[in-house]
Length: 314
Image (tube, rainbow, N blue to C red; front, side, top):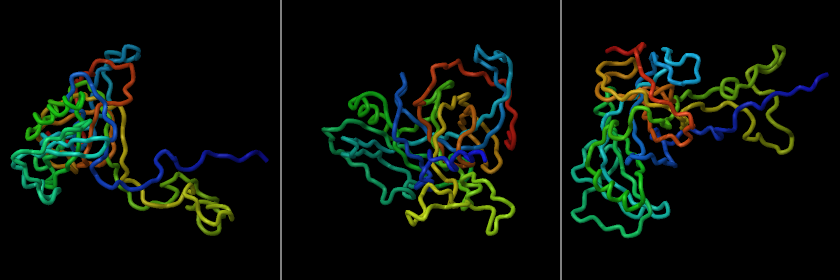
C-alpha cells in the first residue's frame, strides 16, 4: 500500500482566528515617501466593478492594448484633523486638540476634550502623529458615529511637530495626500460569516459515505496523550471579521462621482479607483498607507478608457 499523505488543513498564517476587536484597523508600521507629509488616509468601500485599462507593461504581449481589470471604488470624504499626539519610546507624553470640536465626536469620545488656551509644552518626544476623524455624514449611507485614528507624519520629530501644529483643525482631502499612480497597502476588516464547520472553515475533506457518525467532521481530533484537543486541530468556529492587509494596490484615479451604488447608497464627492479587490463588505472603513513591499517594476499609471459599471447608477 502506498504512503498516504496530504497537506495540513488550515493555514497557520492567520492563527489564531480571532474576530477583530474594532472595525478601525490598526497600522503598526508607516512608510515615508518623497514629497509626502501625511503618510495615510481612509475612506469607505463602495463596490467593485470592471474598467477597461491600457496595458502599460512593456514586456506584456498586450502592451498598449485595452484589457478589462477589476476596480474597487472607495469613497473618500474629507477628514478632519482634530489633534496631535506626542510619543516618547512608544508612550504618549502629551496631546493637543483643536478648538470647537464637532458634536458628532461625542458619540466616540466622552467627554469631548476641551482645547486649552495655553497647551502644555512637551519637551522630550521622539515622534508626533496627527489624530484624524472621519466625517461619515458626508458619506451616503447615513452613518453618524465618526471613526478616530492616528496617522503618522514624515520627517524627524521637530519637523513632525511643526507639520502637526499646522494641520490641527484643518480638513484634508484625498488629493492632498495621494496621487494617481501611488501604490498603497489596504487595511480593512473582512466580511463576518458567523459560525462555520470544519469543512468550510478549515478546508477539511468529507469523510467516507460509510462513516457511522458524520461526514462533515475531522476523523481524528488528537491522541490519548496529551488528554486534550490541541489548537492545531481543525474544528468549527467563528469565521471572518478578521483584520487583513492587501499589499500593492495602485491608485488608478482620484475623481468626483455623483450617483448611487447597491448596498451602499448615494455616492457623492471624491472617490478613489483602486486596481484589484480589497477585503470587507460595502460601507466598511478602509485605511490606506504607502506600500511597504513595493516591487521594483513600477510602470506609469494605467489609463482608463472606459468603465463597465455593475450595480452603480450615474
